[in-house]
Length: 287
Image 1 (tube, one colour):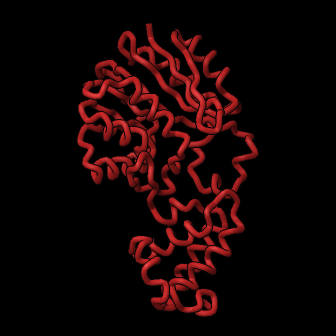
Image 2 (cartoon, helix red, strand yellow):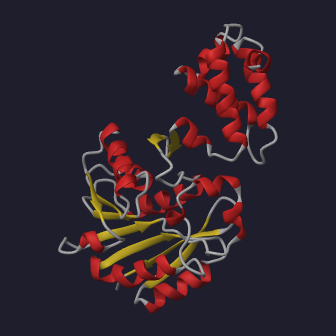
Image 3 (cartoon, helix red, strand yellow):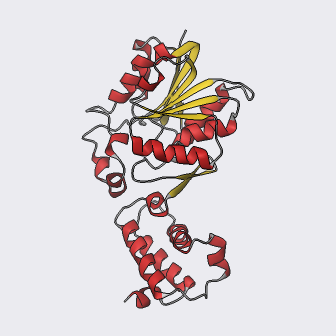
């Protein structure tokens, strides 16, 4: 049965997989087919392009078929391959971590605009997950000291592995809820976070891909703002005078997040839009 499915060669297996994956919305089926097979064969995609006529053993066809079917069932591509690129960095991801999104690169861009190139700032990334934000900032600003926090020991283990593989020795991992691990530490110059911001009853949680991701990294109370409120309330005590807080949030939450930051004592509050024109990141400064 698997032999009929893949027709015995790399090229025909890829073509069949791409036709199957075309059923998914907002995907590049050929690219996903290639990424899955390259992962399975432990070869670069260029190998698939160079040797499309090479035979694909039946055992590998069967395994490839299984990967494609898991993808069709909604399992994120990053979980199937075990990696995701973010800020041109290859990160390991697992079902214990949220899959890094391109939208989050806006948070990194804004942070880098604030941090002078040779600055030795103290920076905290709250709820680091796979470590994507901390890794990107540490990679671009190697003189800075970055603390990455997460309450999930499993997620923090993934982040720590990513920092070690990327040679980012300036990042320290601390387990705990949001700012709690920073107790007793010197104040930060900048605090960053992509916290959960989906409301508990949001219908998007029923989409197949989100059902595979950790719920605790997605949902934040009935209105999706409970984590943002907690961070905003606690952050002033952990920021130096003039320090800043940058928060990613949902595209309809900009006004609410600005209000939360004002109530917490922040000034110079502003919201930045992503490439789609949606309000995505709100920043505030401690006087």
